Structure formats: C-alpha cells, structure tokens
Image 1 (cartoon, rainbow, N blue to C red):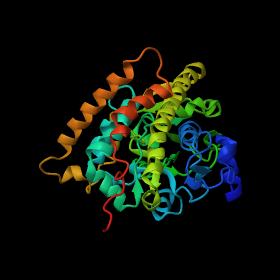
Image 2 (cartoon, rainbow, N blue to C red; image 1 turned 60 degrees about the vertical axis):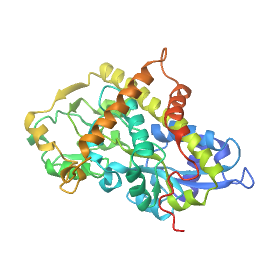
Image 3 (tube, rainbow, N blue to C red; image 1 turned 90 degrees about the vertical axis):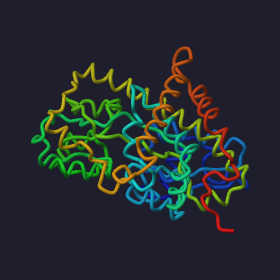
Image 4 (cartoon, rainbow, N blue to C red; image 1 turned 45 degrees about the vertical axis):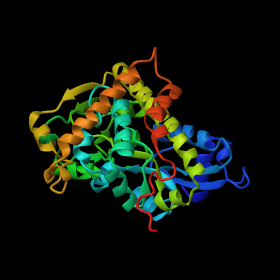
Length: 376
C-alpha cells in the first residue's frame, strides 16, 4: 500500500476526524502500525485511543497500517529515529529494552487472564522500574502501557506435536525471537505479508505460530485442524502506544497529559477486543472440530528457554535480581486479578480504563514521565 492509500485506510478505519486538515492548528501525529487494520490493537485499541486523544482538537492522527510507513522490520528502529512520532513496538524482540525481561515475561500471563498480566506489566514498568524507563529512553522511545495476547501455539492443518514433525516445516512467525526458536526446532520461519488462511491453503506455509484468537477468522479456521499447545511465548511486553522520545519531549505537559489520559482507554479496548476474539475463536474451534494436541515432551524440552539467551540479566544478576522483580510482579498481578474480577458482569472499556487510570496513570508526573535524562 502506498503512503496515500495507507493514510486513507487509517482514516476510514477510525473516523473521518483522523484525516489531515480537518482541525486547523492541531498537531499531526504519524503512527506506524506493523499490524493489519482489523487487528484488535488497531481497530479497537488505537480506535479508542485516537477518539479520546482527538476529542479536544489538539491532535490529528495519521495511521499507517501494515507497516506501510516504516515497514515491519524497521518498526522500532524507525520509531526511535523519529521517522514516525508514535507506533507499535514489540519489545519482546528487543531484550535489552527491559531489565529482567525473561522473568517478567514468563510471569506476565500467569493465571487465566492475560489482562491482569498486561496491567501488572504496565504498572511495574511505569511506576516501579525507573531503570526500565531509562533504558527505553536511551533507545529513543517512551512506553505508554502494555497489552498481551494469549499464549502462542502452533495452528496447523495436521498435528505438529513431536520434535521431528517440525523439521522443514514452513511456519508463519511473528518475528524475533520466534524466528530463532523455529530454526532451533529445525523449522523455517516465514514472514507472511498477506492472508494467513491463503498461505495455508496455497501451501506457502505449513503452520501459523500465534494465539488461538487468530481462529476467530473463519477463513483461517477452515484451514486449521489442530492446535499444538505448549509454551511458545507471547507478545507479553508489547507497547502499543509507543512515542518517539524527541516527539514526547517537544510536547507541552498538557499535551502529554492528553496522550497519557487516552492510553488507558486504548489499552482497555485492546484487552477486551483480544478477550472477545479468544472467546469467538474457541466457539469456532468447537464448531469446526479443531482439537488441541499436547506437545511431546521432547518438543517441549527443545523449546524451553528459547527467550533466555546468555546475555540476559537473569543469568548474571546479583543482589536485588530476578527473584525480587518476580515477587513484586506477582503482587501486582494478584492485585489486578482481584480488581478486574470485583465488578458485576462483564467488564467494560470504561471500567477497565478507570482501574488503570486510578492505579497507574493518575500517579504519573506528566512533567517528567518518559523524558529520560535531559541535558541541562
């Protein structure tokens, strides 16, 4: 998609108010999203974020979907360089970005509800880990909260539950570090720019690595017959509303406050959209006769620790290291599990956003948050 087409796609997706030129004097923000327009983070998360942030006419957002501004591989690098003012960053692909990433990552989806893990990660990084924020600032980006998809499994037309069944298999991969994992398992990671269902149907790929929520797409569900369930990680430290540091520093405190106020609404909308997609996918699985298959122990052993390389902090930490981080994270996770389950009936975007705002965003200093070390 060309630049004009991508802007139009973003405008049509969200609302006519996101198109350039409709609010004189508004700050125009280019947003790179290496995701499709129908992705929960784009359609629901960014949709809610933009609606909230544009309400007072201070901002206008141009959304470039499918990575059409920077490309998928340059999503983080281009954002850090200021080629886009905001965008989506999958921080799991960049282990230097957060201290004790592996420990926290494995804990982020503890329990049955990833929403509690994402909220705990958001509070931990924003309020309790200044070294995390500083390391991100050194990379030129500002973190405005986390979301989490469901655990990643292998979705395929045939069982891929043994170590030898992955040999030579072409598997649609979310990118690093899963590319390395699939190579370790003798599979071939394949970037798929188009439709996953078409890729399976045409024989370009043999499987998809991702959450079962993908099966909410009935086209994909028609091609998939089995889900190999095991720990293949998850996009658990993603930053859907990442800001370029230079752009963030150029904003007045009141402008930063607008974006920080919109973030919990966007995070809540994305979380509930993921939950709805997962529920729909499980119904589709039942109707289509798609079964879970248990991974063979040899396959589990081969995959264990794929995201814990020799350079991770966990392997060289002393003093207050990974165990202390993990204990603090568990406390936050338990807190959010209780908060999200305390309400009556299904949670709404407003109720979830209110919790995130009260527990996290209202406690931030908008005058200093995310700025990193500013030279005098």
